[in-house]
Amino acid sequence: MAMVNAFTAENLARLSAAEQALIKRRDKVLGPAYRLFYERPLHIVKGEGIWLFDAQGNRYLDAYNNVASMGHCHPKVVDAVTKQTALLNTHTRYLHESIIEYAERLTATFPAELSQVMFTCTGSEANDLAVRIARYVTGGTGIIATSLAYHGLTSAVAEFSPSLGEFVNLGEHVRTVAAPDSYRYSREDQMVKFGRDVEAAIADMKRHGIKPAMLIADSIFSSDGIVSDPKGFLKPAVDAIHAAGGLFVADEVQPGFGRTGETMWGFERHGVLPDMVTLGKPMGNGFPMAGLVVKPEIVSEFGAQARYFNTFGGNPVAAAAGAAVLDVIQGEGLQQSALEVGRFMLDALQDLSQEFKQIGDVRGTGLFIGVEIVSDRSNKKADADATTRIVNGLRERRVLISASGPSANVLKIRPPLVFSQANAELLLGELRETLLALRT
Ligand code: PMP
Image 1 (cartoon, rainbow, N blue to C red):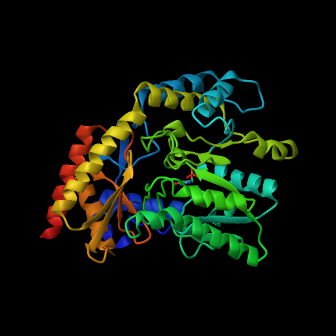
Image 2: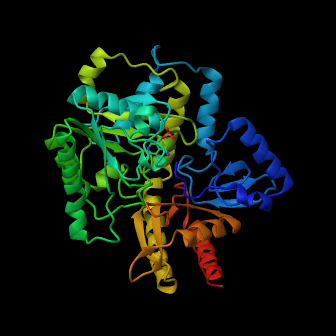
Image 3: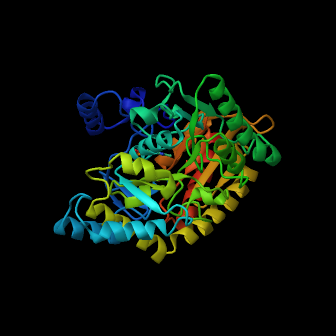
């Protein structure tokens, strides 16, 4: 992936001898495709709630993790997984209550139309399955995604994941559209522009003899720079793909499971109804599980013709992890807490922008926040260099965030949902210190 916050070998000399040795061993055996975060990579050995601990026992505030979205090693999830692992782990070709019960509980959090779920192990697999179903149902092949989207790593999905970088080719049947930019366009523009761009992409496909199968969007546009508002801007785009006979797939791998605060699922904020919804990361709070939620009429024929089996997808341990995650979200009021702590953060970041002119824009919803860093507010010029310095400056202060966006200049703040107001105050204090240090 064209990764914003990646370690490069030029920083090797800044690391301890032990860290350098570990990187060498890693490179030797894992090969060249992997990346590490931060100029000085972290060697993390333990997680607990909102905290990560390195090999020396230093504690870091994790404001970036949405896999351990209920907090690292949440005792309820650990307990559920441990008990089920000791009892039975097998696949979905035997009758077992827990997967059915979990599927019932999960689909109950969706609009009534989205009432069936198929389980996978990764978000990539869920998106791959979405492509197969969309193509089967529509008879088309064309896919529209945003210009810096990431949807996964299978060969079909990498073809519409442009954030993998210029050397990973997009499919001939793929068209990209710019994600909405609420900082540089007016609200009115936003409400029509994305839809018009999707219409243009459909028209272009048709000119090339390609029938559209689907539009896919991450409903918080995580890798495109985080775009939450204005609410409703997805609607014209969804209408356009439907009018062209294609389906709309909401990729909820990032925004799902309460993170956006106002709603359980990101697409709901926009008042649209997807044909399929893909899920991942936080679903098992670290246990690898993912899924595809679908309208029954979309999957009925495909399901009758194409047998579905995923050896590890939907196993009893996954079902136990998933159920524990739902218990925690509901029992600990994490969606509401994400909303409240998120509002506090957004307000405080707005205040900080009065003091620091590098903060061009603050946006987001719940605990998915983007802070756009610019060198000049008058022309909104992106400042990727300052962004990297802020991300690494915070890392040195033991606060972990990252960055995203087409110009690599949007601070991406996406903590586990157990992030409290006190945690937010710590982050804000360290951010202020980091910004002050940039002035010198
Ligand atoms: N969709 C989105 C929006 C993602 O962020 C990711 C992972 N970063 C995926 C899909 C793929 O999920 P996985 O890594 O579990 O395959």
